[in-house]
Length: 103
Image (cartoon, rainbow, N blue to C red; front, side, top):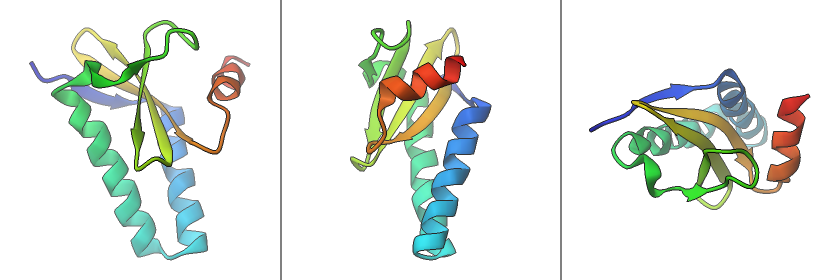
């Protein structure tokens, strides 16, 4: 069974922020290539969504995988879909990030 991949609005905003940062510090082509690789990594969850690490201590049902050791892809598996919740740069505190989402 393949799962549908859906993006939470905050995850999309995270992706755009990553693009903007790279475009500003490198160039738009590099930013596009990097964010396209992140999207492909997220799409790969459609076949094996439970391969990520459970993060129930942050939020029930939360799982995560890393991307190139620089981005944590936080997601939840639901019935027939994988919901991409956030893209968190590893330099940030993941617990604080999810606490801020509650506010």
